[in-house]
Image 1 (cartoon, one colour):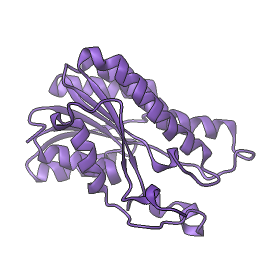
Image 2 (image 1 turned 135 degrees about the vertical axis):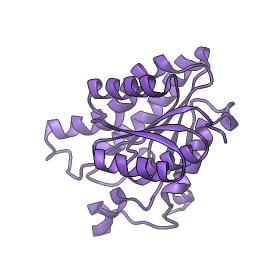
Image 3 (image 1 turned 90 degrees about the horizontal axis):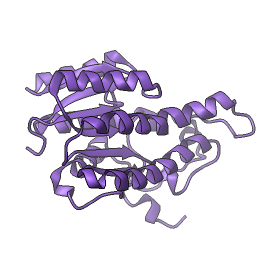
Length: 244
């Protein structure tokens, strides 16, 4: 029970990797704040945790909004106390070429995907004791990508740089900051991806389950990974190891 009585915030906790991570943290004793833009989805995750004897609350949040993030952190602290784990999983994608994308849409992706990690770092780490851990979710698109997803790929590459730098800033406080880079994972984001549907992005090799990523995230968030800091763990089933 690696997370017994530890307060854990997970964004995007209403579905996919975020939901699987919430369930895993709760199974291991964590008190989970399930943050999601869709409150009904967040509550469904909470209901699943409660039904299994765990402890969780739902929080509706647009993670690209500073005030909303601060409200989630305040709710976590007022309900459970100091925050031990933050998992930044919430993300969005667009599928428009750079020459055609609206400026607002480009920066919205960056704000939701990268800005949210900044907001939770700035306002969440203040409430983390030594031994706390932050896990950011990057992507294989940070290493190799496809046309028409430049904002997403850019944000995920930036997540890795942010993770390295913030890890150094938090080292003296005993707080670790790491990232995971998922490959193809069986989630709604993958199934709804028009590049995948059209064949522009080819899914060669195994497709992971959300639980595969949850296992990696929970490892990095736990004391088992106490000597890992500023790292990005590639969790892609060997996708990037394969020659085209």
